[in-house]
Length: 157
Image (cartoon, rainbow, N blue to C red; front, side, top):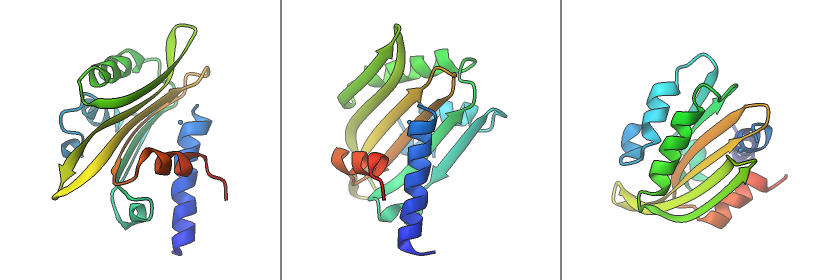
């Protein structure tokens, strides 16, 4: 598959998660959200995507994991609790949250970098829910910076 097609596919996946739905445990070691991927990843109304191959290299990512909830309501309390735990852990260097009618509509957390295979990687948590009760939780690792991430999420071909 051509590199451009791979980029387009990955960008489409990210955009679908972030726009349409509003946006390995070791990789998430020390994060409360790691339990969510284990617990909800195989549920009927949840789609889990995990990418950790050469497909991600052109984006300077080493890991991409997402959970997309068709109806987040049965899971929402636990998700919000995990997000709050991780946001207050002291590992977050940047936080952006948008609350709508008193509820968390979307969240962006930039975490302290960590070492993976001798390389310093940056980590990001993204969460978005919409009024139709659809939601996405995304975890990303890699050498990409915040600007790179925003370009991937919002760049049009």
